[in-house]
Structure formats: structure tokens, C-alpha cells
Length: 366
Image (cartoon, rainbow, N blue to C red; front, side, top):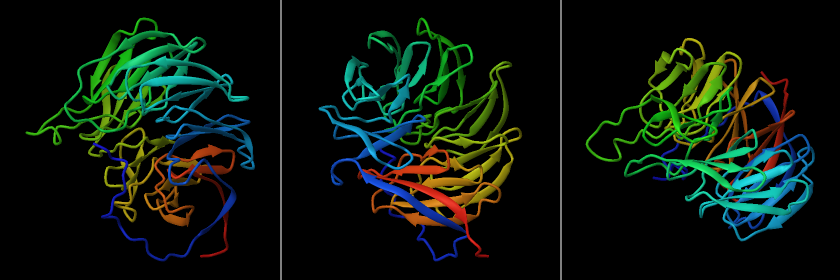
């Protein structure tokens, strides 16, 4: 099931008085607007890397949007790139992880990981960990592209066309949420299951009602992990004691955001919720964007929660109150990926290849 498409039963936007001034700092396009389908972007201090389904890669100066290099390939990229140690790792639709030099775009290697890669990969200690859409986790040598091991389990009949990103634990082992509603911890060296935590149990009398996929990447904060399933309840778990700290009747499929004291979530119906990390109590709820197929949230300037929607609007929400402070339209195409936050810029890409950097300054409006 594809949960990334536009939702036509959306809440219409109403006129409002903006309380912030949203500025477009730079604007570029990656490839053909009709065929680009940009998956997502990632950045380091010196470059932002964007990849698209039609095989284009572009390296951009995140300060001004100027092109550092660009490359056309025969791959169909399907996951947000990973940029580590001057190498870019990108998953493909036909089941490969490919590596390119981040400085000049030179191809390095490709590794067959067996199924479509929809989640950004993760890196630790010379290995790239890849979660594929057949719910397998593979470890790939970061230098050679050799597949070192693969872990897999039986998956449900129907799953979401999205996957959670692997999370690296403090001991280097790998945690990921699967399509069975379970949080698994896998040995970094041997690829064997070390532990598992059932987050959501499938119920119902048909495959759709039994969907409990964990496609929202778990958030790790010291020994506490926060997990939001597509069906079931969002939970906080203590990894040391293996005990549940709290649970909340919230479901979602987008990644979450966090600051020092709160979690920020977009639900299945695009309700935006802030929760206290320690108690699970609701801090605020924003319902004015229901049905607008919001992107995963990102935090800008420790003041704003930034989300995009299916119609190309970017919304800025107060971290403190949940109030909608302002919005701007960057394109008519959906914004599925979360904003990349670079210094005081929120860099957003739409699926049609438009990439825009936004910044905020307060207005005198009341």
C-alpha cells in the first residue's frame, strides 16, 4: 500500500495573518520537473546531495544553492542518500546500494541487497546497514561494497511502501522496526537477532486491518527508544530494563522529530502532535492541516516545526504552542521528505525536483 500519495480529502487552507516572515534564500531544480521525483536530500558541512528516481544526483552548496557537480546514471534511486566520510550511499528501486565519491561524483561500487531500498541507510564502523522493502537488513562493507550478512524474517501479505531507517546503538549493534510491528536489535558483526520488542500486535479479520508496520524510524535518546507504528500505539521503552515507560494511542508512518524534552509526530491523518518525552503527556495538538499528507517534521532554529504538504506548501508551527505561524508555497508538487536543516536554513525538496532553501525572521505583526 502506498501511503505517499496526495490526499484529496484534505483540510482547505484558510487565510491567516503570518506571524513570521518566511524568506526564500535560494531555489534550484533537479532534472526534468515531470520525471525527476526527488526522493530526499542529505548534507554535510560543505555539500547537500539530492537524488531522484530518474537516476540523477546533484551536489549543491547548501549556502547558496550553486551546483558543485551533477551526474546522470542508469539507476532508479528510491531512498534518501547517506553522506559519510566523503562517500554517498544511495539505495535503488531494483535492489542495489550504490556508492559515489561525494567530492566529484565518481562511481565506486554497487551491492545487490535483494529488494527495493526505501529507507535511508545507516553507517557504523566501516559498515553500511540497509533496510530493504522485503523487511531484510543487510550489512555492506563501506569500502568494497561486499555484502557481509543479511537478516530477514517472514513479512505480512500487505505492507506499506515505506521502511524505517536502521538506528545504530551505543554498542554498534543495529535496531530497526519491521513490518510485523516489532523492534529488532541485530548483531553488527554476525547479523543475528539479539533482542526484539513487540510494539504493535496485528488484529482484525483482513490483511489491511492487520497492518502494524513500523515505517517511522525509532528515535534513540540514551537508553530510551521511542517508536511509532502505523497501527497500534506509540511507545517509549527503556532498553536497559526492557520495560515500557509509557504508551500513547497515536499512529503514524512518517519519521518523528525531537528536542531535549518533546517528541513531534505527524499522525496517519496528518494531525501534528507534541508529546512530553518523559511522561508521554500531550503538550499540544495542531489539527488545521488534517488530510494534507504532511511530510515528516523538522526543527528549525529551536523555534519552529517545519512540515511540507501534498500541494507544495511549507508550514511553520510554533514549537512552544503548536500555533500555525506562517506558510509559503514552493511548488505545486507534493513535499514528502522532511526538510534538511542546515544552520538557519530549512531546505525542502518536492517530488518534481524543485529544491528551495527557506529561512525565517520575525515580523512586527500581531
